[in-house]
Image 1: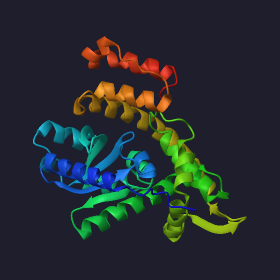
Image 2: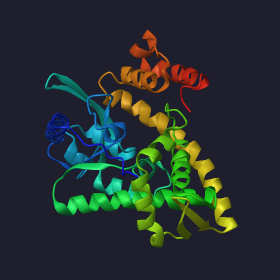
Image 3: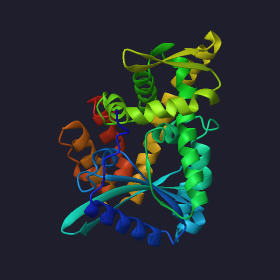
Length: 310
């Protein structure tokens, strides 16, 4: 059993340190914390694929010189950007999101209906940078709260008994299903397989804090669970996820549209990401590239109909 965090080589650590320093300078030293999550955290290879980062900032006006970026970040957090540079003869590519500590704390909690933040950070994340010990503690508490929120919101829709592996796999799958995603359907299972030790430890840590009864027991070498949740709460929970799926897919489109303006070459990034995740070569029509606001809707609708998005 493993927590799933792959060790980073010295080149990778140096490249990430350089990246964090650049981003702190870009955002006027308003960054209080930097989180690494996603496939590079699992593989330990930051030069293969895209490094996924979240930058936690003091406030949006402090993080941006342009008021428009601050406003868009406040209206629909987070803003997402792209950066790449050479390090020791190798290229590092990163997609990073900016969110205020207030929005991050709120987004990880049960006060937020949408699963975008708490579903994402119920996944393991590594704190690459924290301004001071109190900031590190605050971020760690947000990550634990996100896991608690995911269980609170998904358990009413899941089996009353089973393995802890299945509990987290199905919980994450519900969250994935509330967004437009290009990843294959088994991604949640892959994530839990990689971080099973982390999820089992987190379940034990949260067991006494949940608002429903959760019992844990060992059976045939696996950690199992059993919940006791009222039928009425299960019915409300299932209705909430139907609403959450509609809301999440709408917000996914809005964030994608916003990303076209925060990314340099945003439309090409979207095509690259879809090609990487689906194996299908995505070619962006010239008219979409020249007039994205006018023609992107039909382009993405065709991709959705083809099953590229789910």
